[in-house]
Amino acid sequence: MSADTADDHVEHSLREFLGRARWFGGKGRELEVTDVQRLGVVGPPDATEPRVVVHLVEVTYSDGDTELYQVPLAFYAEPQDRLDHAVVGQWTEDGMGQVLAYDATHDRAAMARYLEAFGEEADGELTFRRMQGHDLDLTAPGTLFSGEQSNSSIAFGEDAILKVFRKITPGENPDITTHKVLTEAGSTHIANLYGWVESGDLHLAMLQQFLRTASDGWDIALASVRDLFAEADLHAEEVGGDFAAEAARLGTALKEVHEQLRISFPTGTASAVDIVEGMKGRLHAAVEIVPDLQQYVEGVVAVFDAVDDLGEIPVQRIHGDLHLGQTLRTVLGWKLVDFEGEPAKPLSERLLPDAPWRDVAGMTRSFDYAPHAVAESMPEDDPDVIAQRAHRADEWARRNRKAFLSAYCGELAETDRTLLTAYVLDKAVYECVYEARNRPTWLPIPLAAFPRMI
Image 1: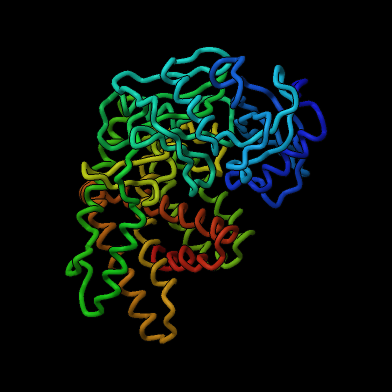
Image 2 (image 1 turned 60 degrees about the vertical axis):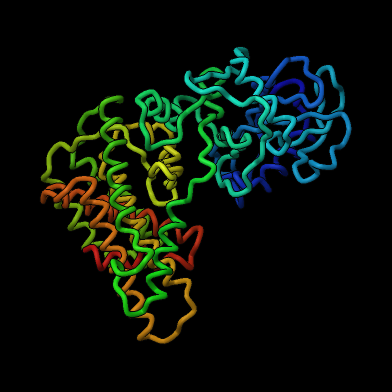
């Protein structure tokens, strides 16, 4: 632990702060703060208020697991009433003495230091890298997004958005490296990368284009479903909010992104046997958490076994966690966001090439989720109405899956259909575990998909 932070009070303050932070992934687990490393100062090293210092906090859980979290702090000599909600605790800072530490992402003055550092392309303990081709508005005020779950994002006016990664793993962050390649290639299906922050082999934050007027793909899909349910005697293609054309545009966007990633990153093949082994392992582990899955195991394994004979499967860099919530609709078309990969996987796994069908499966599952999520949320007890709504939800999902797949790959070959079905089931298994742990009332949605798919 750094000498300037080596005291029990600091550890206690950080432990309390992490416990209430929205982005902290260890809630509910017994933990200790076992190390605090000072990574560097944002801006001049001798800056006065606010002095912004980035720390790397190691937490160790009772089972021995450890995780690293990034905590940028803004130091002030006097209490800041406007930051009462973001106070971390008292600190001792060289040259300032006893100070109050606040979560810097909540402080506009602190975040202005980040923007200034990008403007100067500061290179020290913390390195601020810039992409060419965009003139940053260095006067734009920073505003923290309140809805972030696993990171902290700050919008600078209408110009740029800074994503501060909270859980840190040494090595390449695919959200930065993938965006960098796609930005350099001129892809129209992403928010352009403007720059990033690094310290040694740690990627700490990324600055990219702010799509201020964009609409969330999940919200647009839900609105389409509600339009359908409001018209009891019309089919999905007859309703004003029909989503099929947008689903097709999404298919085209993903196809073009996959093509660019195939050109820009290493490709290869993976053994179908190894892929199936991983899927079966996840299935059997999921049954321990969701016993209701047991009734479908035989049918799911039969689908997985059909993949065994497919030999070597082409793999490449992919998105890794694609669904409607990872898409934005702008006036210029669809954008794919958040290329970090599936959060539950270790970084080393997220960096491995994978079959593009994993992304396709994630999106097709999302088309199934949207209508059934709306149906589940509607307070109707009449069995006939519930059954009719479930039928119409299936109709909406089928129509949009078909439009998406047609645009992405045309008519599916039999081997591709077999492989895609396996990936879709693998995704549904993951969804069951996620819902059981986080949203038990939604667990029936992925469970209901298994009899339809097998």
